[in-house]
Image 1 (cartoon, rainbow, N blue to C red):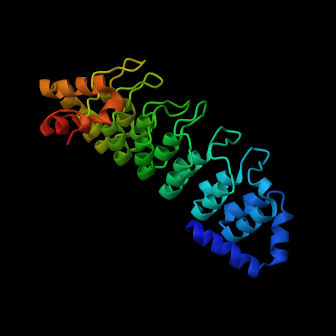
Image 2 (image 1 turned 180 degrees about the vertical axis):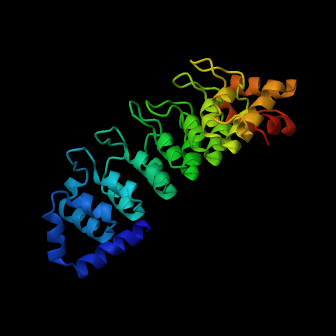
Image 3 (image 1 turned 180 degrees about the horizontal axis):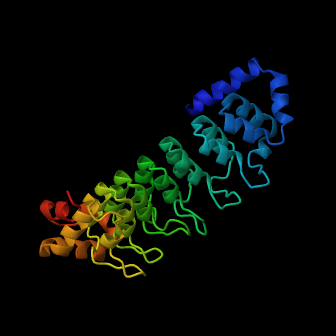
Length: 289
């Protein structure tokens, strides 16, 4: 709904206003939260007209109406709240911002409008970043938006590790490819394990091959001195055979050079590689195209 449509909805609402219904919402402990959770945009607009000062009201868990609208995917409610002055980077008791909730929901329109209103893509001191929330649910379109907005690709949470570790554990090939193409470190360590170790345990073949192609160290050992191949549960599985093949067939020099160059450039410079004064074949080579 456009801004003009929202204003028209307000006008129509107050022509056909139902005072009893509005009062029933106002009698609720958290009327703005209820309307935002329900996706009841006309009622939310009416509440904003009546008591705009409550647009940032918080529950005991510090959840705001904008959290609710973002989590349940109600774009028009998000627009109405932001226009009425809702704080875009407000946090709940777990430290989550509305952007985190929008990434949980997977609504790219909401992610975009929150970013346009100044949502911080890398909020500090969070249990999980918006990027973690998007990747955990394989909302890869949200992942793309966050990567383009400058999300830190290798930030680690206290449970899963980096977003790439999550992809490896859950077999999310598309999300993993977005992260790796943008410059996520393929050999990043969390709790002594690289993403390749996690993918080996789960035996997700597509993710395993993707990690290997992007330079995963097949010889790396975790804190128990186990390689990825050692962690594959079955001795006859395709995952075991794939890893053993890579162990016994070292990569060509051009493959190793590409990985070294990418590691040296880092994700920030990789994102601007098309602006480098390089021949197209070299750019494609570095970007795995």
